[in-house]
Length: 136
Image (cartoon, rainbow, N blue to C red; front, side, top):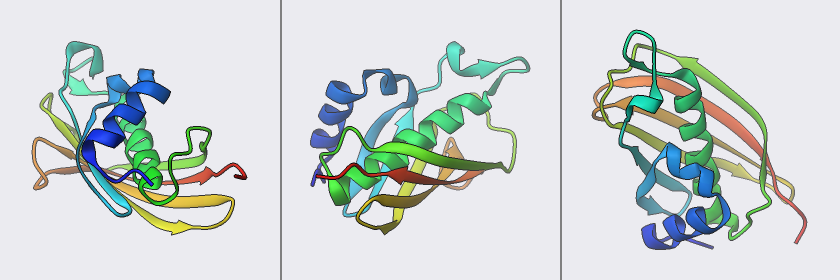
């Protein structure tokens, strides 16, 4: 299992380099992570708000990373389903993603993620996702 911030960030860099555009792990523990995204112009949509695809990608990487703390390292674990509820308009400031694992089975895992704009006082989205875990 990978449970350190350094270990998770290194794992992401090695096995999911495109994930860099969705933030980095700031805190981690058994079954959970907190990720931060420094918002850039490339993350914004017309109107100056953070785009939905940016938030979905960040949540996917965050839940996938949280799952690695329970099963990892397992780079071939893939998303099977992702559902997002947008709750309010995110400001163009740092985004936080707090993800946790809800269930891990032999072949799948389920997690959820809360996306925040600026601080954990400003929730902008709630995400649930299911992942297919390859046989060892």
